[in-house]
Amino acid sequence: MARKEQDATIPERTDVAVIGGGPGGYAAAFEAAAHGLDVTLISDEERIGGVCLLRGCIPSKTLLHVTELLHATQHADSMGIAFEPPRIDPEALRKWKDEVIVKLTDGLAALCQQRGVRLVQARARFAGNHQLRLEGAERDTLGYGHAIIATGSRPTALPDVDFAASDRIMDSTDALALKEIPKSLLVVGGGYIGLEMGMVYQALGSRVTLVEMADRLMANADPDLVEPLATKCDKLFESVQLNTKVAGLKETRRQVKATLESDDSSQDRHFERVLVAVGRQPNTDELGLDQTDVEYDDEGFIQVDAQRQTRDDKIYAIGDVTGGMLLAHEAMHEGKVAAKAIAGKSAAFDVRAVPAVVFTAPQLAWCGLTEQQAKQDDIEIKTLRFPWQASGRALSMGAEDGMTKWIVEPESGRILGMGIVGPQAESLIAEGVLAVEMGAVAEDLALTVHPHPTLSETIGECAELFLGQATHYG
Image 1 (cartoon, rainbow, N blue to C red):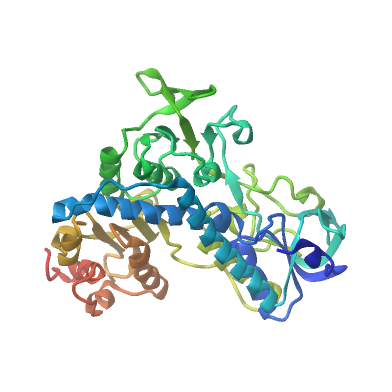
Image 2: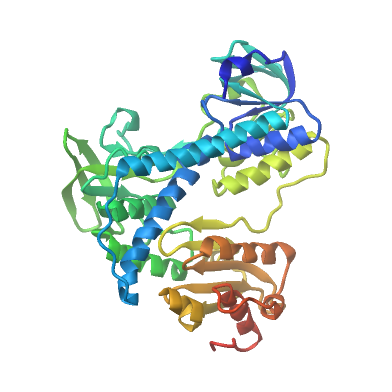
C-alpha cells in the first residue's frame, strides 16, 4: 500500500468507512463499491489482508501443505516406496511462505484500485458525530455516512504472559514466523490452532508435547470425528496430556520451565519454546466505542442484528469482533450482508451451515448441526456413518481410518449437518454445506451419481444408509 499516495486522496467524508483490511473488511468494501458507494478502507497494516492472510489462514496452510508432503513420504514406506530423510531449510521455507503472502496481498491491493476502493493506512478511532480520528494519516479526521467495524481478533495470553516481551513463549503469529525449529515444544491448547501448529513443528523436527484442560481434543467437534485425529496425535507427539493446565511458565535464556497440573499430580518440565493457543479475543478495546451507541458484551464482542447493524444505526460490525466461529469465510459473508444493507438492499446473515475445517493429518471438517449439539438441545436426529474401510479410494490412499457422517431428521431425512474426517475433508465438506442450505434430504444425496473411485462416493453411500443399506457397507 503506497501510504502517501493514498493519504493524499482522503476526502472530508466517505459514504462507507470500513475499519480493518482482513477478509471481512475487504469483502465488505468491494461489495459496497459494487453498489456505487464511495468506500474508504482503513487498515493500520502496511499490506491489506488482515490476520488471515498475513498471520493466520494463508501462512499456516502454506506450512501445513509442507506437513502433508512430509507425512506422505513417511507413509509411502507401507506402499513399497522409501525416501531418504528430508533436508529442511527453514530460511527457504520462510521465503516461500512470504512469497505466497506477497502475491495475494499485491492482488488485493490491485483489486482495490480496480474497484474504486480508497485505501488508507492509519489507525482509526471513533470521535463522535459520525467522525473517525485517523492516527498516522496526513488527514486527521474522516466523516462517514456508515461505518463497518472489521478489526478482527488477537490471540489470548495466559496470565502473566507477555508475548511481545518474551523470546521463547509464542502466540500463533510468532509460531508462523518460523524463527527456529526448537528441539522441544510445548503446545498449550488442544483446539485447531494448537493442533495445526503442533503438527507443523512436529513434521519439521520438534518433539511436541500438547496439554489441554478439557478431557479431549477439539471439544467443539463430535468425539467420533476427533478420534482418528487424537490417535494420530498420540503417535506423532511426544505426549498429549488431557485434563491438564499450565500453572506457570518461567522463562530463562535457553528454555522455559512449565508447571503442569492435573487432578492428581504436578510436574515441572523444560522446553525450548512454548506455543500458547488458548483462544482469541476481539479487537474492540481501542476503537473509541464509548463515543458511539455501539453495545458489546463482557468479553468485548459487539452486539449486532441479522443485517450486522449495531445499536448505533450508522455503524455495522462483522467477523471476529461479533463472536461466532471466528472464521474468515464467515466474516466475508457477513461483510457482504452489511454492505448490501447499507446500500438499501434486502440482506440478512441467516446461514444454516458455516463449515469448519481443521487442516491436520487427518483433516477434520463439519457443518450444520453436530451430534453433540443435538443432544445438548434435545433435538431428535438420526446419525448415519460410513467408515472409509469400505471405500476403495480411501484404502488405495491408506486413509481407512476416515469417516463420513450425516446428521438427518428421522422422519423426512432432511440433512441437518455433516462431518468428515480424513484426507480432502476441506473440499468434501462443501457438498454438505450445500445440502444443508438447500434443504436436501438423504435420498437426494443417495440418488446423486458420485464419480468412482473417489472419496466423494462416501457422501452418497452414507446417505444410502438412510434408505436401508449402502452399496459397499451395511
